[in-house]
Amino acid sequence: MSATGRPLRHLAGGTLGAALLTILAPFIPWLATLDLFCYDAWHRLAGQRTMPTRTAIIAIDDASLTRFQDTPLAFWQPQLGAAIATLRTVGVRAIGIDLIHATSAETWLTALGAGDTPAGRGYEAPYREALAAGGIVLAAARPERPGEADLLPPADHLLLLPGGGDDLGLVNLEADADGFIRRLAPALAAEAPSLTLAARLVVAAEPGHRFDDDRRAVPIPFAGPPETVPRVSLTRLTEADAAADPAVRLLRDRVVIIAAESARLQDLQLTPYARALPTAPPRLMSGGE
Image (cartoon, rainbow, N blue to C red; front, side, top):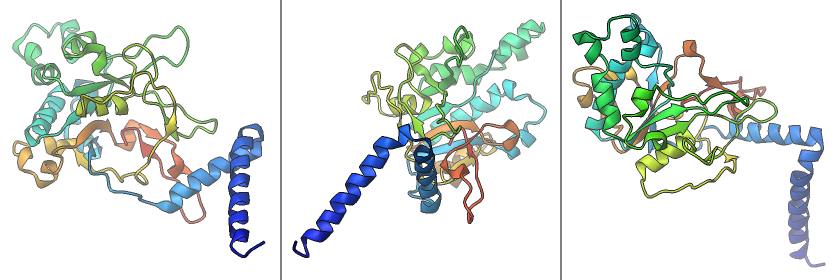
């Protein structure tokens, strides 16, 4: 055999061997475990792969919780309304809210007998106006067990969305057997709400984009380890001159997600970056990222 043929033969043999291992991995437990370890280790060693330029997170962080500590998170509609107004002023493309409220603040105030007051009637006004203007995707979740109901936004908020159920994005995550999140499907159901929050935000930002009923889970293209996606604290968006803040102005043309980032809110997920290596301690990733 010629010298040129030997490398080609070795390459073909290596490729065939790798393909065979991939096929056999689901049937041999230790091979499947090794495959997941190698997948995670690659991400950890690769570090930051790219700088996100089209997305950002509006963080409900420790600073936000401290600033608004006298208001329960379920009653943050005025803060969310102010933040959304700022985001629209600087020209973001779409806004996702990765929070599911069990009820609206105004419904709760009415139950307390304080709804029919000037303060009660106008408490959520800026937030409700923002929902009615469109371009916002609210979080929802499909039940994890048969017989359970969907987790949906309050009915009075849902009715304000121009697209109704089509303006909801599912936040269900499908973990592998070891509890790690590595894959995500664009669609999780046939009827609305059907698309994941990420997919629904793509449609909101690019109205012509379609996912149809694509329920195939594909590897998540992680940009890098936790905190790779740019963040701006929610507190900065509620300042009177927020739209002049250079960090806020950089959000122009991005798709943003308002999400719980404080560790106290415990919205943390296991991803490949939670895999501990001798030179890299495990790191949890926020649900919004």
